[in-house]
Length: 52
Image (cartoon, rainbow, N blue to C red; front, side, top):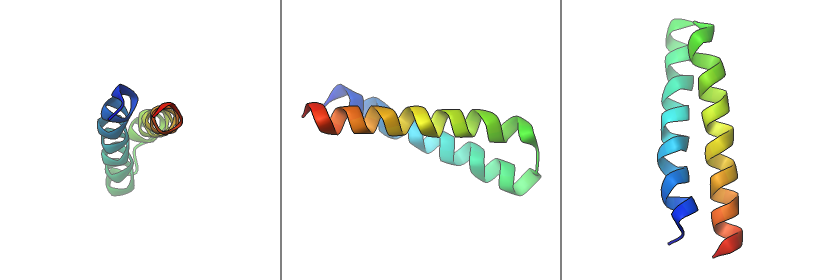
């Protein structure tokens, strides 16, 4: 397994957790970092899939 995939999965999970906190609390302080972390996780996963 590529290192990009191994780092992308936890980042994606943390981003989903922040999005869930946003949906529960309606606080924008969770939405922006959650969105950024989800995009970073997706980029890492795509790079990891293309490399391997």
